[in-house]
Image 1 (cartoon, rainbow, N blue to C red):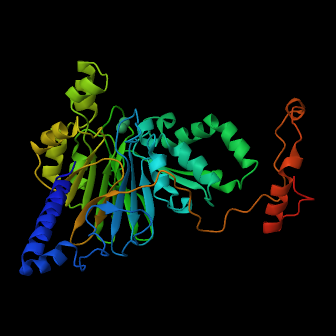
Image 2 (tube, helix red, strand yellow):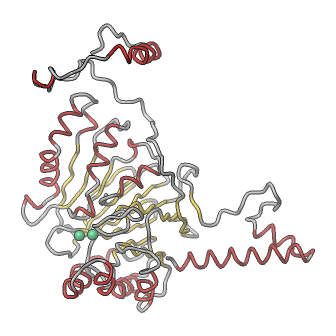
Image 3 (cartoon, rainbow, N blue to C red):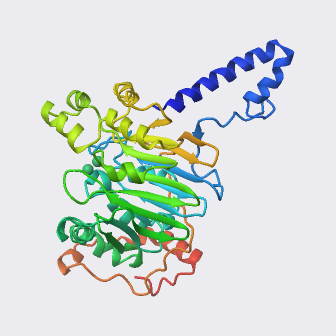
Length: 417
Ligand SMILES: [Zn+2]
Ligand SMILES: [Zn+2]
């Protein structure tokens, strides 16, 4: 839970008091209007926009940046919290995904952003809780209207096999049946992945530069060589995303003067023992030597002093959030969000606003460009004779459906196979 969230609730309470006072005292009426966000209060008025964000209903100002947490939890993803994923949307229309951890695809889908706009993924490192749902975005977006290839940026490793290029080659081997069978039916282009592997040792090295956006990477320290952190700069704004990472000098240096800094803040060793099934020594090692503990997170933030700090990579609920929050506050008293899934930040010149996205469980994809063209040839036959022999011809039952669809879209059923 965020400090600013508490403040928001405080304001709401103050507004309610002002409203009551307003009914009692004539001079309070103005206060009521103020409490209602400047709108005239009354039974037909809208509530002030304080804490909720409804995806797909707000245009982004050309000078504004919006960041949405699509995954903030642990490798054992749970329904309430997917593993690491953050969506960055810029006022110039550009959108970027930073990591795409296990379970995050369901949140991404709920924002109802056309898949054509979700084609750029930056991976901090190759743990599944940071790229496990690449498969969902790849195949799901392919079936749901994406017209171009997916583009992935990720670090090299100490050896070629430990790098992103090798991981994506392996991905296609792993998903060969998926790839071949979809490619036989759908437009093949959106099924491709363009890989941009960059040197993990690049220190503030540019890995992306297009349309006024510059993204740099820097080494991170997490179990083995390879992991990185990212700095995105656009329009005078600076956004920093750290994947898994113990405190290091590169992050401390390059995250300075940033607007929003996202950094892991791992569960305390005690939480790992109590709730996550880890042995005490393992919990201590994982929580302090492989990841950043809450007080170490606080120390990083009080050193770099961002406009707003975001802590993530812990399960955030009543049982844990106060212990986590108190541990961060031992070393940091600046602006802070204790992230959970679907938390949203709007970054503007004069303010950074934290809200929660109200999402639907039943989102469909939204189309933008013309759908990918149908193949001009029928699907390649990938059946053996033995399997074809098992087909049961009940096509008569769907004749009406076929005819109606063909009539609606001008499809010639005589040549359709
Ligand atoms: Zn990791
Ligand atoms: Zn992780």
